[in-house]
Length: 263
Image (cartoon, rainbow, N blue to C red; front, side, top):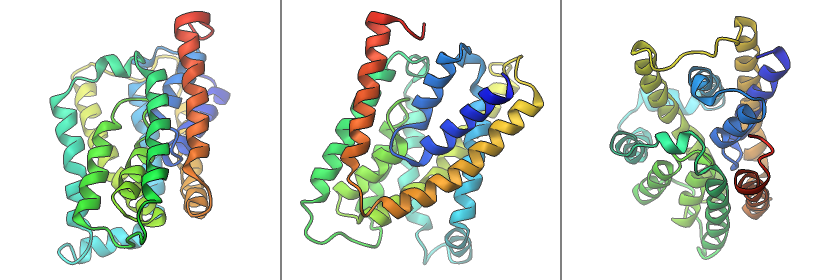
């Protein structure tokens, strides 16, 4: 992995994590195009996710600090509730085939369906809530569990769950990004176990400098992506992101079953 490839992978992760387009799906697609064995890139992927986690803490450090200071009076317990479904899904279901890209194209298309449905359902609520309630946390938590499938956007699914359950766009986006913190930490713990068991490692061709470039770019672009998404979430329809993921999904399926461009 050279410096340019590292830059691209970091940029893909940083932007994809917080726009409703699926960072895991884009990262897998980019690695396939570059000719990498995705099975040997698991550790790098976790490092990239941890870089975006730093971006989340930078943007929301006041909210997290308030949660630590007042755990019973803050939204901390709602964050725990929203995390439980994903934990159960990760422990119960085997996503190995999905993480090898078997359903990547279909997952991009499913993201489009989820975003369109969220836009439609969100407009049916006459007055969107600006404070997260248990029903919102549960809805967003369930959608986060479903979004473990690569290609199905985590941020898009959780924002969709919030909007569909009556939460305002801005608050759904905020809570979705904060939900990414325990999700990424949990993924890192599972990956650490694989590393200790010898089941995962960095690709042999990944130099220390390439990894550093990828991680730094992921963190910086992730921070900018959060700020960008929070600025546009009130003004732009999710249908535009749905259109993009639909086109990408059809391209991936066409490659898989017909053209084999990226084989």
